[in-house]
Structure formats: C-alpha cells, structure tokens
Image 1 (cartoon, rainbow, N blue to C red):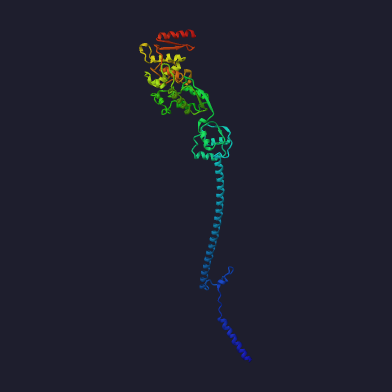
Image 2: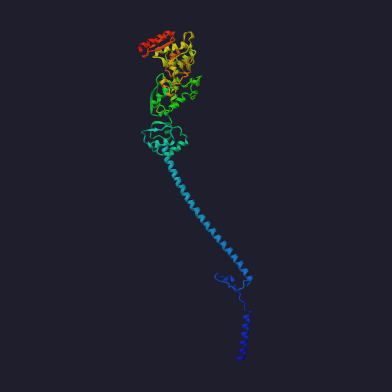
Length: 451
C-alpha cells in the first residue's frame, strides 16, 4: 500500500471519527437508573432538562398509587381471610356450645322429669316434716330436700312456679311418703287436713271472747291472739253467717262474735291461723242451732231456730243469745237456769211500781272483763262498761259470754214464776224473791252464815 494513501485514509478515518463523536447522542431511560442513594450535585442547575423531570414525577406518582392500591388490596385480602377464619372459629365454638348446652338441658330435663314423676324414688317410707309459718317456696323446697322427699330442688321450684302453687303451702307437721310425685306433694302440703300437729282444746260454757283467746293461746292452738280478737269484732264473717249479719248494733259491741263461739271440744292445729279457728266455732254454732234435739215441753224433736220461730217470744235470736249468756254467767246449775230465765223475762217486762228499773246484774258490770281485777291497771280507776245493766235499761248491747245449749234452751223456755230477784251463797245455793224486801232478807241471811 502507498504510504500516502495509507496516511490519507488514516486522516480521513480520524475525521470520520471526530464527526461521529460530535454527532453521538446518548439516550438513557432515567427510570432504569433510579437510585435512592443517588445524590444530585448541588452545582447542577435545578431546571436542567425540566421537561424530563415532570415526566419522572408523574411516573413516580403513578407508581406510588399502584403500590398503595396493591397494598390495600393485599390488606383487604388478608382481612377477608382473617374474617373467614374468625367466622369458622365462632361457628365451631357456637356449635360446640349448643351441643354442650343441649346435652346439659337434656340431662336436666331427664333427671328433672324422673324426679317430678318419682321414677327413681322408690322408697315408700314416710317421714315427718315441719313446714314453717308463712312458708316460701325456698322454705318448702329445703325441707323436702333435707328429708329426701325430692331430689331436684331447682326442678321442683320450677314446677311450683309454673303451676302457680307457691301460695298453697300451709304451715304444720306432716307425715309424707318419700315416693310421691310433685303434684301429689303439693296437694298434700296444701291441705291442713293432712297435718298431724293437732291439739284438743275444750272451751267451757260461759267463757268470753277474751277468755277463749287466752285458752287457745295457752294450748298452742292460736297463732296470733291479737288477730283473733280483731276478727271477733269485724265484718269478716257477715256474708257467711246470717245470725252474725242480723246484728243491729254491732258498732256498740265490744266483740261482735261474742255469744257465737260455741263452747265445745275442738281439734285445732298448732298455731292455727285465727280466721280458721273462728270458722270452726261459727260452723259449730250454726250446726248446733239447726240440730234436732229432744226438749222438755215439745212433743217432737226440734231445733233452736224452730223454737225461736214457733215460740211467742218477742226477742230475736240475737237477743235470746244475750239472755242465754246472762243465764250462763249467773246460774249455779241447769235447774237454776230456768228460774233465772224466768226472773230475767219478768224484769224485762216489769212495771216500775215493782221497784225494778233495770236488770242490775253483776255479770255485766265490768264486761268484757270478768271483774275489776281483770281490767287493765291503767284503766281501773275510770273504767265503765257500756254493758253495765245497773245503769242502762233492758238488755246489754249483746251477749256477755258464749253460752251452752242448756242456757240457750232455758232462755227460750223460762219457768213460770213471779220472781224478780235472785242471789247465791258461797256454795252456789240459789235464793229467789218476788219483792225487794225478800231479796234483802235473803242477802242478810247469806251474809250471816257465809261469814
């Protein structure tokens, strides 16, 4: 090769290289070389290639939104997965709980029903139980459980509440079998007829309401003495007994039921409620005045009510009972009753010229008390009975005690006599008189030998 040509070619080649170098332009995609560690030179103009910078910012913003969207999508997916897991867990726990509760309920129902029907209680022996006063369901349940009469207390309470039997239980002592079902138990404990804690109490003829209350309380037959006395002066029994409703001056009486608590021997439950006790008295009285009996002077058996209706007496049954109560309080014996009845009838119709202005009976002076000593100490100095027949004319407002049948019959069938006065010695011997002079003579005679 010619060296000149070689040199020219080399010169041309260098020239070509320079031209290429001048025309060379490097295009670099800045997104491919983003580096957080890249630090822009402080000397580099901030507005260099500004158009390209705006594109980069928009690109970065788009990518940030895509990243955030992707992140939210992933979080939502994770939350959905978590919720799904929680639902599965809850459903599992709920099903297990339902199964457990169902199993427990089934066991409760089965054991409860067996106890309700006494399926597993085969012991037929009896046990004595004590039901307290004003018993609650809890009280009764405890007594039954303690004495092995029932085995499922909660189920028994449920049965009592469902059947609304909570108020049916009565206090007392019962002998109950251990193999009775719930219904039989409730029925058994709801009837006082099944109680075994009874006491026999004899009310003697002539006892007043106050004395009867004391007798009942002393024998343990009365639960509440104050309630008894209050009921004896109430209208509680008017609708059940016509002879009580017929009283015309109840507001003036100390005890409305005085005279109608028939003296007899009764079977009461220990601490029996006052209302039940009074019903026994009044029912017995009603039976007695309607009971046929043989009475002297009557051709056939008759009743007290028939005698009142058929006799020529002007007195009502209530007034007859008042007369009978005075006879019972004053007479020494049955024979004396008929004479005193005669004297009372005579004095009630006596002319004032005979010196008889009132009945003048000691038995009425301190009623409802027997004597001045029985009057409460704070009232003794000023006490004055409304029934005092020394001050008032005619009969007292009502009976002064509770008479027996002999006194009632004597009140309806007095002896025929002209006596207006009577008195007794210390031995109960009776003395009768037609005039006040004879009465005073009898009193002087009694005083002479009694002293």
